[in-house]
Length: 290
Image (cartoon, rainbow, N blue to C red):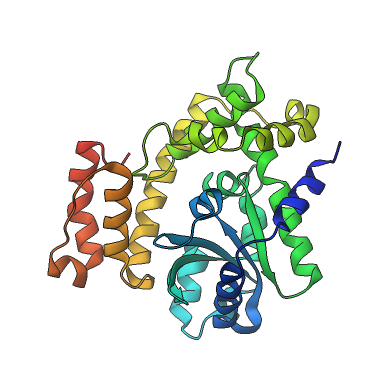
């Protein structure tokens, strides 16, 4: 049976639509020699559909200061990683997050600042661009730690006889609660059910590793979830400065996943941070965002 790192490497190297590769290269070029690797992940990868949707990328950079011409962007990225940007190429739209190589590796480990990165990269992703073999190896090494980290956080929150797929579903349900999300409450199960064989293979490759990982109970998770919600608000506030059309994107995403009908007013488009602050209480009260 392949070990976990081999499974991760094989999955990361699976082919993608050439338009994804071209967009990844263009994103990397935007940040010059600081760019180390580009990862493609998310719903477009799972659904194998690109047109009419927003593609999701992570850009790994060597250093924040080197990645930006404007110093405040480097400071913002260092204080509240990642920065998120909007990008278009060849009729496709994307958002990409920027994180340093060191921060990305840290966020896939058990002492990560938030649970979000490990949860995202415990799911399928593709390494669609890298500057060299060393950068590719660093990305593979970091992502190989994401699944053990995620499930290690979760084992104490599941029944002792929980099956592997149930543990994965529990893990995603818990991490979803640590973010402001507009998706349906059954989304965590749907992620696993979309490719159960994949999640079973990853569990089998981890073997008894989870028995030796730290166990975190309800109190730890409540703290992570409170921290994650506040962190999500801070990231949204920052994204209003870095993400062109950010208010429209957020409204579109909420409408798509929560079944709402938010129509932004002109002043909300001009002042996306204020728009978010005025919309958030109503969205939380209605349950559209959790």
